[in-house]
Image (cartoon, rainbow, N blue to C red; front, top):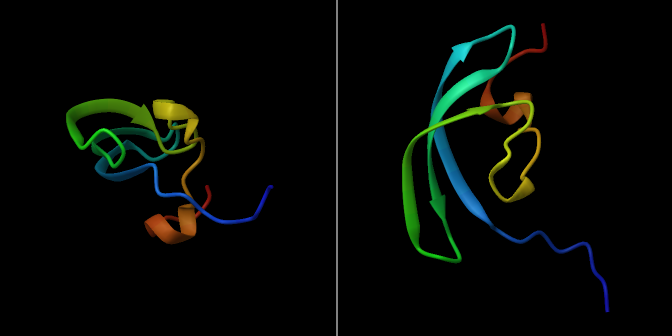
Length: 65
């Protein structure tokens, strides 16, 4: 059975390094594995960790260029 329920995969906090490209350095807390990864280089437009994808720029507090 499928539903539209959202599942918490990870919590991410980070620092935007380049506004134009979306490059960021972040810490990721993997909820399922109870594991913290630090100094992860990624992109707010495409978080590759567990295929999270693009972060909501509005939620993050950024405006689209």
